[in-house]
View (spheres, one colour):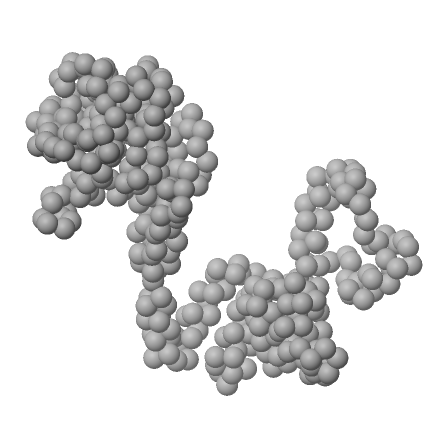
Length: 388
């Protein structure tokens, strides 16, 4: 690159108050200078900035190694080096520990360190190489020059794969054990928050993650999402719900306690369901939008329950199916999928929608029902939009 000044050199230029590489000290000046760059120089500046970040990161790592070798954090402040890095550089515990481990590994990777100081190796790649060296120090020294070369043009993802293949060659048993350990770390948690929402997090195996990702992406296919104003995160959240609903609707073996099919308990005043009373219905004790309940009851198993003045159950009726299975099959044969104009969602994604809701006197008949995908079914209830 044209500018190979070190961190210390640039700091001296800055302190002296000028020079071609002196950084802008305020947002307006930096923005004005950037906006004046011609297109080609702007692209070159972006690449150069990343190279400088790479160089500075490598220099920082070497400085940390020397700092630790001199035991300055312990001698001056009574802190371990990771604690000192957390305090002075505001790093997380994991970042501080990782930086120190990489710093000490660089001493044994002269070829890669030289590449990093030239700005050709990204910080993440440098960290992965240091970890590989720590796991297989004897074998790594024999192949360091190769890693020094490929680390200058492989992305972090591809470099990780290259390291993985190399580790299989030098120690297959250990590589297999690592994969099995990663698989054992799979987890999924979902908990209801105080406001009634649900929070979820998880870690999947490589296979499981690809399956989940493929399923979610299939439902979020842009060809079925024209004029969709949801964020990407909202589309993915809705996709998980849709996948779960599809499984419950189509798996005849799904059972919960007492051998009963899975169900959701909804508490709603009939006048609320008809839209004649301003009150929020509940799902398992959490308040929800009345239009959500109207959408759910378009095509659901309904169990009438009479409540007393203290909300105690007085009588529980027999479950009735709003849309019989035979009528659902007839709807699918007639509509083939979502009937919203321009929507190509398949029938497996669709709900059976009452054009005139049954709570308002609408009949459960082919003439009064139509297939709508979840997004457009929601639009008819929550946005009061009729299918075009």
